Image 1 (tube, rainbow, N blue to C red):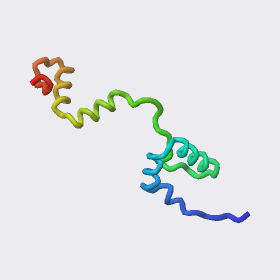
Image 2 (image 1 turned 135 degrees about the horizontal axis):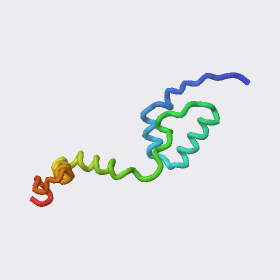
Image 3 (image 1 turned 30 degrees about the vertical axis):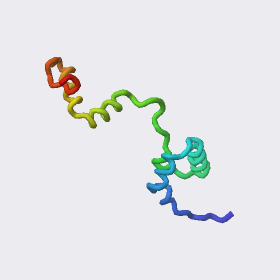
Image 4 (image 1 turned 90 degrees about the vertical axis):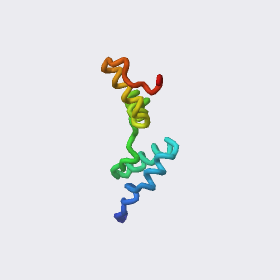
Length: 90
């Protein structure tokens, strides 16, 4: 059997990462299995995502990034300042 070298730069491309993000989970699983059987290290795009729902803190940090006024009001309430600027009640 002849040994053949192959260029693996395509495994680390943005196009493959986009494809794997949009693909059915069964396709991604098959891709991972094929690479593991061949002994090829998995690209970052093919690694498994964290299981389960994301924590509420990650959702709220994204919400506060989009709504800085509400973020300030939430922080003021946490610090015990009830009369702080509240965009929801102004």
